[in-house]
Length: 161
Picture 1 (cartoon, rainbow, N blue to C red):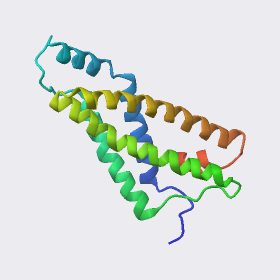
Picture 2 (picture 1 turned 135 degrees about the horizontal axis):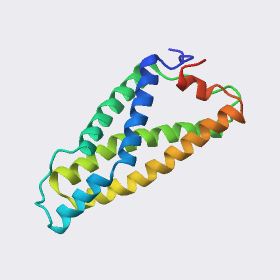
Picture 3 (picture 1 turned 45 degrees about the vertical axis):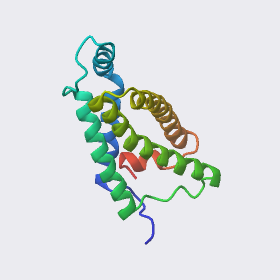
């Protein structure tokens, strides 16, 4: 099967929906952090309570698994012909790391939150830092592709090619 020339509408919607949910998690994590600290210092009982961060984390996991399934079944557009092989390798590694983080973080977060375990919480916090760095690099790469390299990479995920 040859690679599609565009992302499907569903792939585009999932990309931006997951991006919005991850942004929510990053911007509004203070509530879960405060509850976690209270649980760990004994201020409140060490019992998981429903909260938006955990719910959105589970939704991210589900949507990422759907996105991976579609990626395997449908494929993704080939890299631009002008792309140097090393940049293609970096793009593939970056996407693999995104998927690994977006699948792994809900599990580490759930292990920490639902079982009151500190080690998964530490892993979750470290993964969050890696994810934020990766997001910054991903956005920078998209901007460079669009304005400097003049490729259609950004247009493809916006749905305008």
